[in-house]
Image 1 (cartoon, one colour):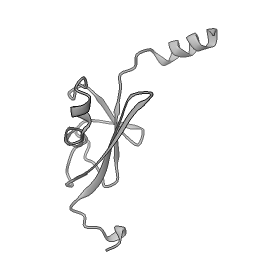
Image 2 (image 1 turned 30 degrees about the horizontal axis):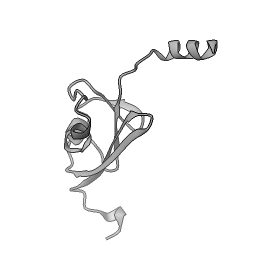
Image 3 (image 1 turned 60 degrees about the horizontal axis):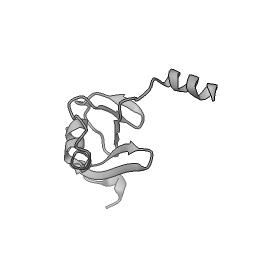
Image 4 (image 1 turned 180 degrees about the horizontal axis):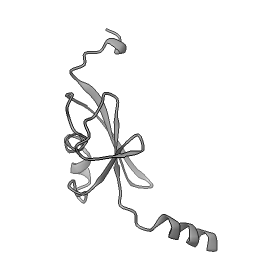
Length: 99
């Protein structure tokens, strides 16, 4: 069976999280149609490895576009967990420009 004719009852999903510049995790999992983005995150290995993540308040995205926790995933989606900003991007540019 080719991948174009794959059964539609299981989706291949990736969950990505960059804890820091040198720590990145990409977990691949399978889920059923109708699964939400936050459910996929909870099923991934990320919450076990990074207990500091607050699963109620984290920001999520799919391929760089912010989504809500109740976003229904599609086959092939990459769910991205975004870290909170430490510094405002405008302020960071000002600091960098002064150097």
